[in-house]
Length: 355
Image 1 (cartoon, rainbow, N blue to C red):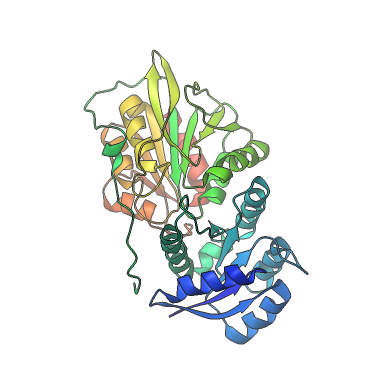
Image 2: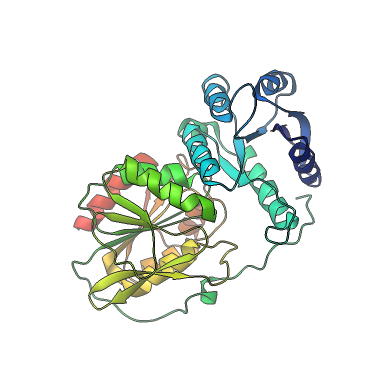
């Protein structure tokens, strides 16, 4: 059984999270706490495997508590965040401090159904419970009905178009769980004259713009949330909006961003598979594909398509991944040329684009 401690100042949220997690046969909520000071004592008493943590609480804010926790007793933490710009910024800071992942505050309405939230929360708790201590340092009993699982065919058809190698380089990066920090590490290692970079990170709509702004502030590159029709330029990185697929298309001699509101692929929009397929078709051997830490298999098939189109491909290694799901699947499906620890990925990208 996975033992979970819920830390949230809202009694309603504590009750809802408890009911959701208890519905999974392999998860037990061993306790709840309405603020970090109570949580501190209950961690000692109950020895939970995973903590869910609110971002705004009385007596001590979530970031201060998380910073102390990771220093004194590192453990898997899943943040429970509000879908606001301020909530997004605090949550991104929490991921920098070592939180494994986040879910948005539960809402019982038609726009964000409870079953969808339940599935996401349970899956992320299970992943967090299996995160290795090394990954922390570097950074079912459920009968729920899953959402339909589409492939990239739902957004972009396969093509057999052949491309010839040119000097127009392109880098495509995909990630999920643990990816915001992994992407930051990679971008920080790249100089301002790096070829254009396109990025698909599984992230909610309210979080993608603040994430892009943080990357722009912390790297030598110009980083932005991608816009439809935007030209892809050297020294720039374009992050898929949290509500749309990002594709790369050719417009004459230029690479251009194209946004699509097509159905979720592998239950994600943006999808890494969609981005990678579009890059395979638009850039072929002129591209480098990078798949980083993440839960599931999104991007594994797309990276194989890039590989088969002549692109050079990299997967983050298992030891430095928070979750070796996406990169592991990419390796298993034969689409990876190089398996590299996170701190070497940027150097490896630079080496490959110079070959």
